Amino acid sequence: MRKDLTVKKFWENKSWIIATLAIIITFFVLILSLESNSVTVKVNQLNIRSGPSVTYSVKAKVKHGQRLQVISRKSNWIKVIYKHRTIGWVAAWLVQNTNVQNVTRLSEATIVLDPGHGGSDTGALSMNGQPEKRYTLEVAKRVERKLQARGARVVMTRDSDKTVPLAARPEVANSASANIFVSFHFDSSDENNVASGYTCYFYHDGDSKKLAKAVNNNMSDLPLPSRGVDFGNFLVIRDNSVPAILIEGGYINTKKDFKQIKDPAYQKKLATDVVNGIANYFKNNN
Image (tube, rainbow, N blue to C red; front, side, top):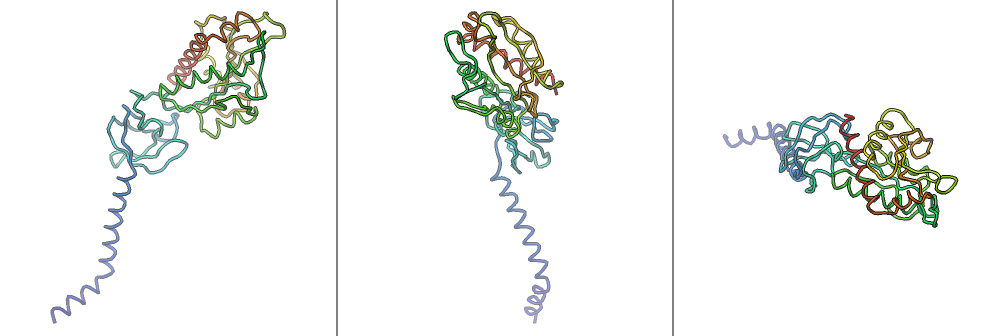
């Protein structure tokens, strides 16, 4: 009789028991899922931001060796849970980057570099027929390496001698969820040897102008004269949705300028100055 009562009570409470078991199983599956879908931070002071961009506020900082549970991914940012209570976003390319000692706003940025011309579009020619497209790519690649060394995510509109339509170049910034866009060119005058120097152009006031000034201010020690910061009605910066500038790094059809343009030492110095200018822009524009 007692056995019959026990069986009866079991069946009466079956729904409650099944529901409880389901909750317990779901809880353990969730814990296992979170543990298996986690990452270990390998940089110092990784920022957890309120949204998937360097423009969002910092909610917390994560030290080297801490684990983060991954919720989702968007635009090369990861939505995470930290210490089971803080939810926010971290830059995916930084989480396990062992080359970056400390995270900065520059290292959290996505930067599009645009080497002007390419492929069938040679750009301007030097007095001995050397194409502008060659040197814009060489300088852009130097900038790319220096930015990556400092942790930034870099996207190139072209990384080889290929044709890229003008209208497609600013679109790269949109698709990459970029923070800034920098286009590289070398100027040319109507006559040989009548102009000299470098110029930083912007189209939109505000952040684009601030970026142009920040970069230009760091180029003051180049062996060519500065022609300053100026408005430029160029499609790649005019039709851009992010802060965008176009740098003319010297006059390719002026003998003394071209001597510098083709010199790896000048290219290296130009790249260093551009990167430092970009870093100052991010440092001073929160």
